[in-house]
Image 1 (cartoon, rainbow, N blue to C red):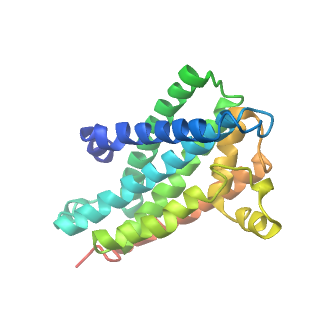
Image 2 (tube, one colour; image 1 turned 45 degrees about the vertical axis):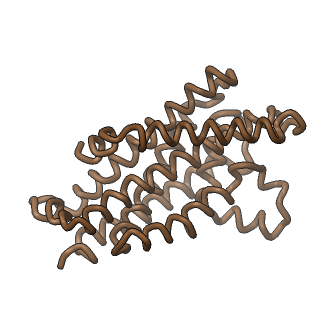
Length: 243
């Protein structure tokens, strides 16, 4: 609950700002190329784009929630408040991940309401979209824990965000179908877990995707499990946390 309360206290920064950013992305793309772009995967371009924007926003916020919480605690010297109570590494992991998933779901709900009200988009498979949103929040939330434990200061955290997380979010089919890429780039996309997250949410929203949803579910589940296990090991051992 502490992690959830932490982002709710500054809701204008953690919830409202991502919604505004997502809305600006959709508005700019609509004004720039929307009217001149034909259907993609059998739906208007904006409806194709919306699930990518939604997923990108969710995973960026899930990563930011866990990574910033740990780095701020380390820099301010109050990480001891997390380490001192008789909590296991798994319990600490669940606490951080609950905040990441909750923030991701809040953001996803806000964007979904906007898509319904403005574009009239009704998800084709809402439960599938929900599953991939949760998997995305778990994967990037777990990655945020690993990055937060590893980083010693804010500029290291910013480097990880700018050179790893942001490119992953932008170059994973957010704004385009990977079928339009050259063969080499298309093959690289299919080994990127974030591609499967975006593709899975897109299938849940518009009913079409670049890959098999079941394959995406397996890849995303294993990826989330892998980074969460690594985060658990780091939290349990106190790596870069204990003096």
